[in-house]
Length: 152
Image (cartoon, rainbow, N blue to C red; front, side):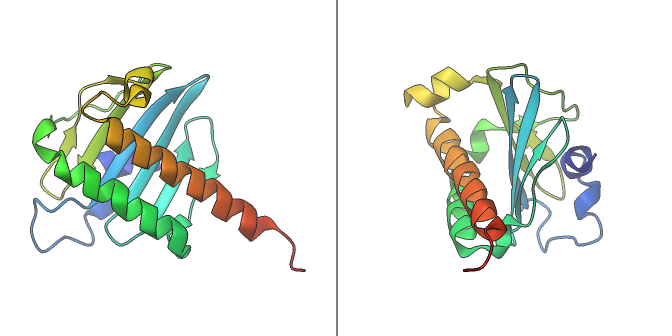
């Protein structure tokens, strides 16, 4: 439900940007076995990972290490903005496929569907974006694990 609210921009409606074409959030939908992992990195540093099967990691932006790598993900997404086009439907990608989105107040922009293997090869035009997304996911997991550790 949060994914849909984000991609339809209803989640951002109460807090508009100064410029409607400013990228508010960069999103990666990654088709994994049994579902989809959705990574969302917002302009204010808020970063979350949602799983279509339920659960995920929210509140990653509270950790400096996550904010730092999420900023790189947003910057790389913005650098590729001309490779995205306006979309109004947001189907889940099949397993092994990835789709990126950029959310502005005016529109949601989507990339072409990419093969996760092509992204990992380093030769795809979105390889750097995919690599930074994977770095965000790793840092989210690490930060979540550190936060769950009992105090010493």
